[in-house]
Length: 309
Image 1 (cartoon, helix red, strand yellow):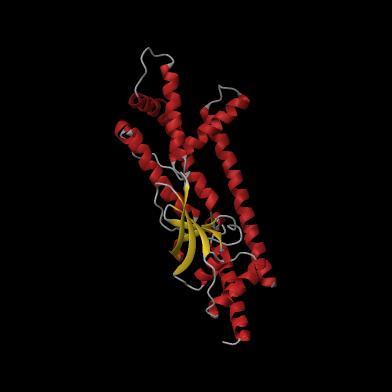
Image 2 (image 1 turned 135 degrees about the vertical axis):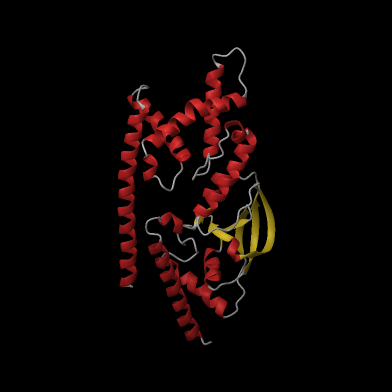
């Protein structure tokens, strides 16, 4: 293929991926976070890897590259370029593929069996757009016990992390066997640690009035009966879950307790839970409506800008 033909084909390739990025954005206009490329730093904050080990050169499946260390705002979750300023670099790499030019290996971080780009985001973007299955990479591994499967959004990765955290929590505390309740479920990571700290705090205050320290089993049962379930029952009675259809009652418990604590600091310790629930529900409804309006505006502006080009 002549240089002119390669240049034309490369321009077409870039237009296609930019259009796909727009379609991806439009399909998720109510939940734009699902189209964000996963940030390595966000994953590290959730998994807390022990250390990093240089692995060296590897042939890596492209499908297992799911995010980036620093360029996660430049590409969407499918590694389609989101901005026009990425065009020249993207075109040059696309042309190199068409001319069978060997490109330098990308530099990746591995964590939990999936990969994040440290250097070479454009090369990965072009490789994914062209359906390339494997890519040469220089790899550094961030050590963690959890194993992740490739996901196209942070949501899919978060679900895997939450599932892992739940297994650890139930194994560590015997919570399900003690309470006969296996429905302590969350939609955000890190919440089982919050629950564990709630139980430890509850245990501490009980022991202030005890001659002998109560067992962890008794503390869990006491917390469950006197703290957790009364709040859950109040949430159910108010039918507040109707406005939180994608959340769990355990989510609401954690959020509500935190919200309640903040309000008590400002308004006094005797603030009734029923009033807190009403205020919480009203505040959330207003913020949700604002979020939807803002997302619709962003998608319309993107569509208008692309049509002008």
